[in-house]
Image 1 (tube, rainbow, N blue to C red):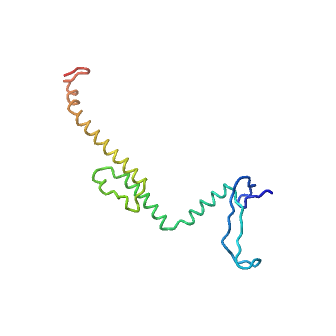
Image 2: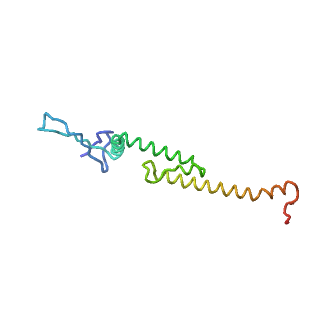
Image 3: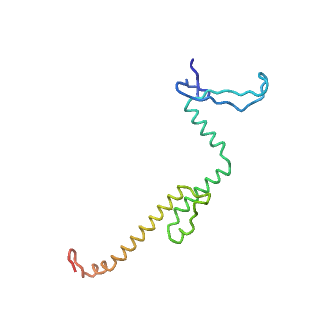
Length: 140
């Protein structure tokens, strides 16, 4: 017996799902009745994703928006002064992504400081090269 998906109409050839409607009053059966739907694997994935979205509360959506905003803010906090304004792991807006961005920003600050130190160390040598005291390949 071939069963077709009630959503897309394709013949269900692999494992699939049965989806039941919420209970409804029925004239045929005493009490409440449910409607049974045969759903193929592809349609089940779409249905499951829809359920996740439908069951997401406004508060959860707002929390995710604020968590994304925190990540965006952290990406711009690339000075020692602005790093002091970071949130900690106890803050509901902290996520692993936020922590990863903070680690990357810390690396950026450290590399920038190293580059500034190297630049400062080379500055006197560049001045000497500009006035011709140090010739190319010569040691002093």
